Length: 255
Length: 338
Image 1 (cartoon, rainbow over the protein chains, first blue to last red):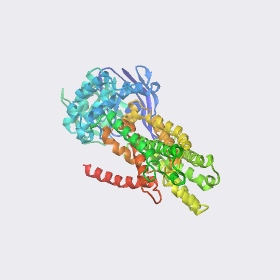
Image 2 (image 1 turned 60 degrees about the vertical axis):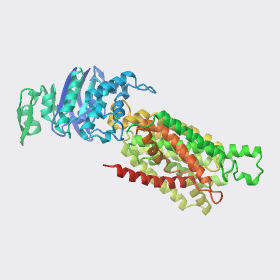
Image 3 (image 1 turned 90 degrees about the vertical axis):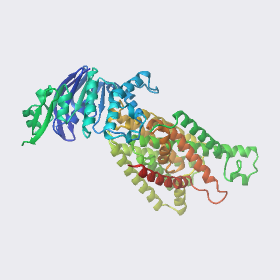
Image 4 (image 1 turned 180 degrees about the vertical axis):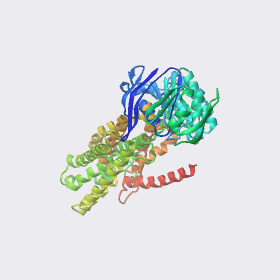
């Protein structure tokens, strides 16, 4: 699956948030979408997911996403919203099974294919121990993994996730990043909005740095997370180090 | 939470209960004996009269109880799923208020008093349906082309308040105390003295409403995870919202137009059913339809139990039973809250 975004413009109310973004992603890749608050990361990912109107084009394997049926689009890309949750005290297995809705024919029950996909998602996200529990009784970290399993169960070639690790403890942050990495390694594309630059540097193949609604830098983590880029966009000075286990430690702000 | 019973079992038991109450509603009448209704005092109860009572009085009453209860239960469950709010009920979107106002305007104009026969029976429901449709049209205009859940609730509340005010105004300006009394009594909600004509009249509206609401079942499940997630699971939220609201308006508007306002059924029944079906909004629809029918039929049996004195109004009984239950629900929710 190849995702191509061409000259995308999107607005939130009267404010134009995304101003001419173009990017292409293909194959087994874990792409981190980074940038300070308010530069349009969420707006960009929501436009790609078809949740807000935009100008420009989003194509999947050359087909305009806006011309696809909602179901076909749902099978092609899965989306995990920022701070997602359940409004009802659903049982975990039932919640994860919702990920198969785009594949179910009207009036048909889940097939063996669906059951297998659900089982794979449960295994990948490591949530087998919570099956049968009420999702609202889980801790924040456990719930985040269950909701991620729901998004994985779609088995879409493209997975869009918005801030999957914010508000989680370090253990669960690493756990979620490992799951996303594993999903990408299975030959799929993951695009994640991330705020933790160390995690982004360590787990992503590629980082796209947004600033002011435009792509400021796009490339390997080492090429994007430079002192100059961090100063220009995040307005911080940071310690950048590590070889295989890269880290970015913000030290002070610069004006 | 895990569903303790299979949905097949839940639905079978509720269907059997509904059927039993439906049969009881036909069998038991005022006075508690077989077919001993008011007619028994004015005529000898021979077979022809019994048949007449059965087909002209008991059957329409039981059928309307079934249809109205199912409409209230189903649409209550649908709206709670759509709005992801356990406090949602069919009256919320303004269709009930619109239907009540439409029916009251017919009373107020005196049409229902001056004319007899077909017109008497049909003008009030016609006014009610027209009122519900006007309320839905206003809701659509207020909420706009891409309605969000919040704008729908706000517009619904505004319409309910406005139609309520107009209904009060018509009471205020009623031409005679008798007209005002008739309006008040009608608004209390009742299944008494309805005919098969009214059953046939509401059936297409209710049927269409049921189908529209039922068509959203899988989207309601997806909506458990929020609007964005439901949209990215392949559901057009615009279409889902439109179907659920229009379906609710048609079914509830039709119900109110023939029976007046029967409160609390649409609110309480989905709460009763939710633990039985593992909380899933889609699995809640059918049990809520059965549960609503059973509750209204049971309440209508209850109002006929006292041997003499004025017959209690159905809406009064459902609210009398429903309000304390709702309080209990709040207390229980508070206790369970972490």
